[in-house]
Image (tube, rainbow, N blue to C red; front, side, top):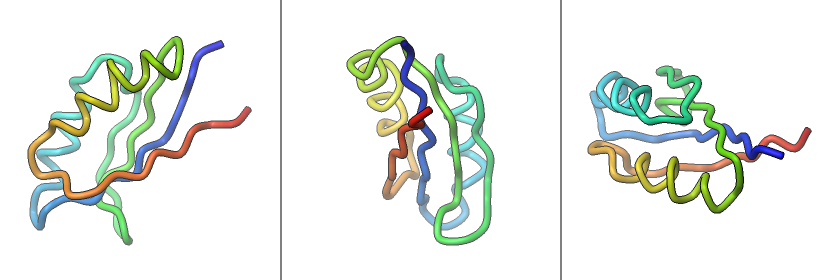
Length: 77
């Protein structure tokens, strides 16, 4: 069973577009869009396991310049 999650991202001022573009290029990411509200970008990603999700997706997201905070919300269905 694969692991899917939404990740809510806060960015530095004016960085939402560049952060979303960089995240879209990460393998496993199916959605990355700028939004309004308390978060600046929302993304959805999938990986074969939680371990692979952390290694292949989260570690690369956290390395993107301009991100100040993330909140990972795993899909439960």
